[in-house]
Length: 154
Image (cartoon, rainbow, N blue to C red; front, side, top):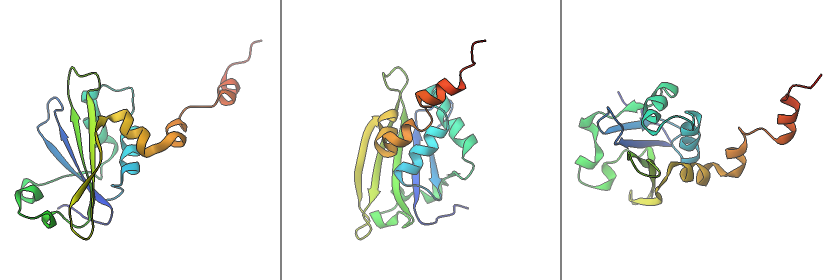
């Protein structure tokens, strides 16, 4: 059963080796900065093809969307659940300079229409845009911290 609460989203993942098209419901924290944090938490050093399995391992609240509930198989834009405020398309393209690319849309509440926020852009650009400089560098220790962590010469 797909749980739908405020600020949910749909993340469609295509092109990942060993996976068909996979549509995941983010039941909460579906806004772009939260998704960027989720993706960032999976590790930037992993290969492109490993991002989807890592995402599913680290974030157990992601729920596969039952094909019977695919909103694009219905008529109007309002067929999309109201709780989904955003939707994303994550594509893995082997052999490309930037194999992971993200597109994002935001729902207009009154009309139910979707407005493109970005994309398709390389995944690092998505992270930078929605996390900002402060959060992107938070995991990188400052020079003072690095110096404090270095072993002292004796």
